Amino acid sequence: MRAVAIVGLGKTPFGAFQDRDLRSLGVEAGRKCLEDAGAAPSQVEAFYLGNFAGPSFAGQNHLAPYVAGAMGIEGVPATRFEAACASGGSAFFHAYSSVAAGLYDVVLVTGVEKMTSQSTPRVSEILAGAGDMAGEIKAGGTFAALFAMIARRHMHQYGTTREQMAAVAVKNHANAFKNPYAHMHKLITLEQALAGKPIAEPLTIYDCSLISDGAASLLLAPLDRASEFAGQPVLVAGIAQTSGPLALDRREDITTFTAVRKAAQKAYRMAGVAAPDIQFAEVHDCFTIAEIMAMEDLGFVAPGEGGPYVQRGATALGGERPVNASGGLKAKGHPVGATGAAQICDVAEQIRGAAGERQVRNRDLGLAQNLGGSGATAVVTILRSVR
Image 1 (cartoon, rainbow, N blue to C red):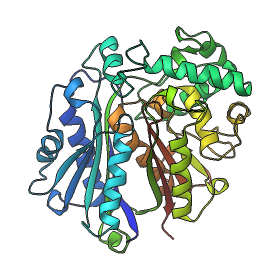
Image 2: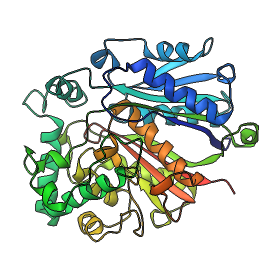
Image 3: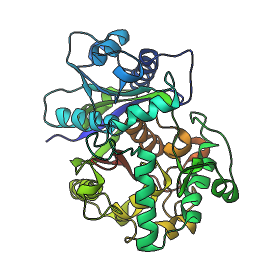
């Protein structure tokens, strides 16, 4: 397997854009990425699109060539990857695999979602399709309800508190306030987070990620060809995608995502590192409890210690291990097909030293963790500076 580098990055702002469609968002991110790399569309040998529900959200199928063609990329494989909220991470994983295996040299990955064209109830219905439709969803479960059950069990099992979950929201809002590409620029207090509109007990509106539009792109090439591109290269040191049971009732313990644990272990082995070596991370905080669980499943802390870890400031921008310096899904936004690609963009941006006010101090080794559904898919990517 060949060493692979990210040689180009491109993102759109995340938000609610009434005047934008799915294709225009994907094209903007892709063109920015190619410009960053100093590459032309004709150099792209394959195009991988991460998208969860374009047919339902935007009424468009056959999305990969639909987006690629508008970028001027034709005559090459153009393939869409769907893995719920991990669609972008999965597209990146398969793009990495194709370059590492020598199948292609230059591959463009774009994650995109246009969600705000639908009403909030319809969005919830579409998102529910990533769950067990014959079981928990048929019984009335939404993802907010499922993660509320997960949160309540975590609170019962480990003593996790609403204040600890609210601390995740306060931190991520503060980080997003410094991110010009974030959906929400709103500072909140712990008291505001706790007093938010109830969604699914114990979760309030401030525990839930946003319904967003947006896109992110990355250009991959063999490390030994990285010098041919203008973008500062970032090494893909380790990566893994794993799966687990779709429904919560198929799991022995709903306070952990086994797919995340397995993906992290594989990615650590591939990179030749351990959890304590990771200096910063972008994790999948679709709900605040998910960030707390990520701290535990990634091995940053022991089970049950994720809440206190966040509460004492360890994951703050100036803490010992900054987590979600971008603002996370909670406040940066969560256009589901774009999220995984955007997380990797944000980690690479930090390693390049190009994160502006959100720049972390120690930036040689970072991790992105992307989750699909209520934990049935996990992608963990470890990036390292090129020495």
